[in-house]
Image (tube, rainbow, N blue to C red; front, top):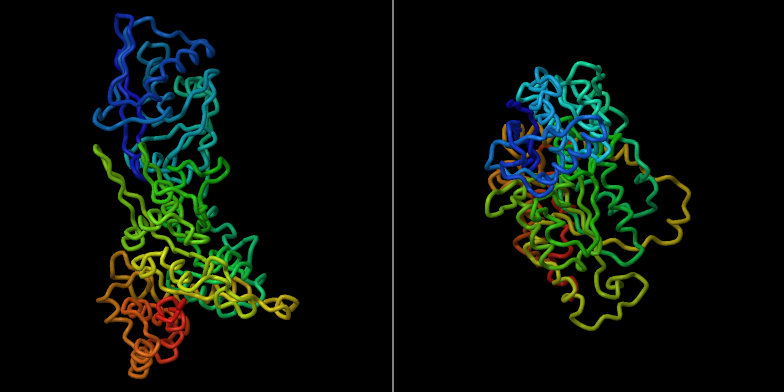
Length: 512
């Protein structure tokens, strides 16, 4: 008898439907075809053990399992469940009338329990798009998949539950999750707050500007000046995720297997902080079986690189294209996958190997030329993609001992949200441009032209401070954001003047 069950394969952050055809006829051999990897081929041994433990009989016949489309590689052990159900139905041990209405995925343990899988959310979205009545998943993935409205999602813990449900001997209650209620759950709650930061008003202002325009930031300062502390608080002033952004972010983490069993939807912007020993593949994604890297896990959030010069040069250089295109394409001989990578890059570094160049009190002990050599570990093209260069100085004792509470994150966040709303309205008809940092040269000439006095200040700064040509566009983008924070339609002189202050590393005198 021929029976069809349905699963899915995840490619990138999307899924495609896999039809699993099972035919049981006379004979004694087991055939599994359709480009399965080793984990899929090993399903026979797991399924045989499950049948024995749950009281079902392994057919002593010729079993052919075809996984279509045959030119798509099937990876992992998540196909155990639909293959096992198909074998039982094809051997007529259970009725097959209800099987075609459900997509199902799950790894089987030898005792019949069902283990969680990766990519439950994109698979659930595909099941809904294909018109399936329901989706049967491990209980640990049920809340994640149940975010998809219009699809019955059943969480199961054992193979027997699935068989009894499909045979009509047992009913299952579908998992119910209200995505709007989940999404609106207090997103602003955080263990860190800008109110905890003593002093550093200039740096906090720069981070507010960065958050308002989606700009990349590099903080340069001596050890203990608060660079990491400030970076970890940046997500608390970013605008809240929209529902579409939350779904897209959750899909990426689902594919990477980073969601816990209790999580149905990510409602906070990601903050990823890989160690400087990270490899190229771990940062941008890839591998023999491609997985999202840190830049994709930071999509719609912040990627923090602490001690930037300590990262391998090759690791930093592979970020150049994703920073520009906001997506990463991973190509292999037989296929390629695209992962989104629209993130804010926040980096920090010491100004020199000893850490005390430009320190107000401690003396730098580095030899002449060492400061420039240390900075040169970061290539010019990468620095070109960082809009704000901020010097962070140590906080004096009187400010550390001050008991006055500084401005909190929620207050700053409200200003950032207002600025982002202005940008959303400005770019609503322009595809793939949502904030000032994403403007190209044409948009800069249209929306970021300073008034006459602003032009004069910019010209003077370029000449007197010996700023590089690459700083010009960045200053205009940041000036536009500063004007948006003030609600000004035009870029004025003081907006340009403030933006110029955030290009310290472009000055030829820096580190000399």
